[in-house]
Image (cartoon, rainbow, N blue to C red; front, top):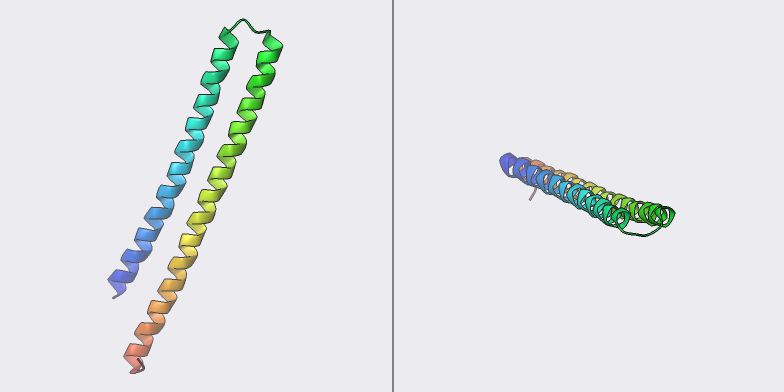
Length: 103
């Protein structure tokens, strides 16, 4: 039973790490796309100041989006951790009751 609890908690931790890694990967992808877009704009015939302004807007927007996704992922990971703690407590109480003879 203890192995099952440990296994369940470990599985939840792995899932939380996976969510965070996906958010980081997506954030990096967004930033890379913004840089590529900025390079395209810089290579065009537009006035440099207009390009710089647009580039700054894109980078700012993508950073905001990336930060939001990371916060959401951290929140989901925390929720998974809280749920794991609750399940561990419930299972522990169940085991104590079984040992004490109270089902």
